[in-house]
Image (tube, rainbow, N blue to C red; front, side):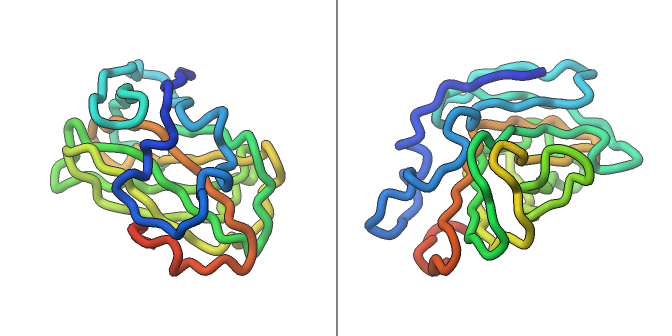
Length: 187
């Protein structure tokens, strides 16, 4: 299922403190930050109201435990780029566990090539709560992701759970950027 969530990007980082620069000039997924593709689409994912997050809408995904974590996944294309080795990249997504897995839910997020071999340039995993929150991490890119050849992927088949995904933002600050300027992002 492919869905677009209307966004007001300027509101997304209201709770985070960043350097005096306009970090929104560094986003590389502006046209797709509200698009989620869910595979497989059974059971069918659906759009739900999500007051309080940018766009006020989210994608609800029911995931069953699979043999592989990627047996159920949500992906969002990155329409910009490129990302080069050594670039400081940051990923931020709004999410919540509408029905958490037994023992709690975790999100495994990746910025990766959108085709085989699906090599990742950034990975992070984080526990998520039932409350809406922005989850954020930054890394130094390890591989090249050519322009329009990447995506954000979230592997959901780690447990029986229902996850809601809001907008996702990908930033590329280039090489040599001081990660200390990304205050408020878990890192």
